[in-house]
Image (cartoon, rainbow, N blue to C red; front, side, top):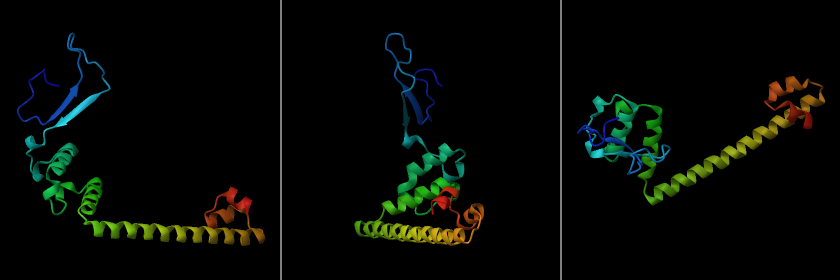
Length: 150
């Protein structure tokens, strides 16, 4: 921490707490404001050392990045760039994207239901042939309770 008013000229991250004006004690230590002065952050891609540096870089430069820089290969940035790509879609592209997601999840649900029903049918047949419940559970991935209810 720096004494009041003595932030380095290149400081771009500030933690602000509410203080009592009379005795200068922190009024409520669970409330902190973090101010980021983006124009003061001037590190280039090759100077990024910490995750904080990477986030500052991407927040300041995302609008002009055409592809993900080498310094931002962490998995979290992959997700960020995917979402940024979706945000650039036109209304028609976004509608098509949302529709394709609906179709995907509908198909997934149908397949999951079919697999579950198939597993239950196999479990019923195995139970009718006196296979042990443990063997049925191992083959069908159903729980022991689910098999007992069949």
